[in-house]
Image 1 (cartoon, rainbow, N blue to C red):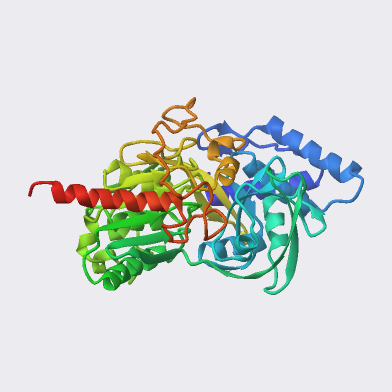
Image 2: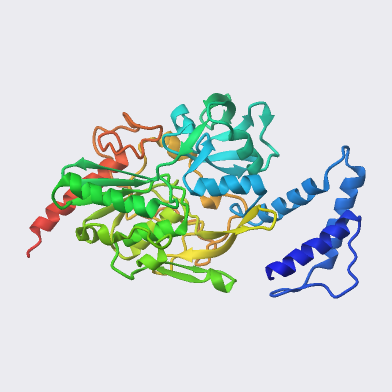
Length: 467
């Protein structure tokens, strides 16, 4: 249905609803796919609206009722569709640009509570010890149950320097945990890099943002400058990367793939939701004048590559892992990923708000859907922190998640056998962050240590291969 027709419909139904009844004397507007509008259901909606206006214990504004109805209409579709009022929409767009005020938590919902998907690196939440899987029970003195995710975000965000208290339920704790955090300007640095040791590079992408493509290209170039000679191997760390903008995933994949190799394709009902994206600047550059990977050392196309993933790797990070796995360009190491194989379109509305709506499923170059399944690593290496691993939540655990079109009944447990843990590492990280990931320290990170060992073995095998 076109936008003008939607606006006409909104005006028509809203006017009727405010009057307490829905009466349409002319032929209903036709939906381009489903025929006429469901008048009986709309009359029921109007009746409920009228009952609330008349009989609810306290007066309720029309605007609040309509907004909540819109939120319910979208959130009832799947876990990733949502409605944003003008203020929330502004904050959402700031988040994709890499800077906003708040605590630094990626969140979702579960059983009416707000669930921590992952704390963002180097933020108040991560430094305080908030963990993936935590349930936020209260924000200051406000119970979270019943709050929309947008309202929860509003309460957690605020002026830098101000404080907020979160009451957390954690499966491993018998009593709620209370954290008092100081809000800060969250400047999420999406790309970090360093040399693990001479000849072996490490790049971490924490989230795919508007400038990730340029920052990633700069990081690769700097690694070659720091090493002074061609790299022998590289680790791309996508653990606990919740995803982000699609062109960032295409651009990062393009750094390692041949020109015009297929990275991902999408399938949806609308014609503009059907896309095929390739390792070509036209499919990942943000606009005219954006940095291109042509400035990256050509040797990066052939450097031995290991990609680290875990259950916190979702959406855009799974696109990268899937593309590199299908093209046999990298070994995927770690644990089964989150399994978010859907694409959300962000659509502005006339009221300066917007909706985030699932419009397509995406597929890897070989036609695999990872929806509710995830990417199964080539080599399974469990996380060093077994307690954290037990708290991980995946797409298949979420209510109303989309089914996998390749195999709707498949929950896809990892089929590869875990590799043995390196001796002396134990079950918990010795140093680094709360989950042992993303610190670039192979000595204290089980999965990173294994990735480095794999690259070294590959070097030995290359030397033995006859020229």
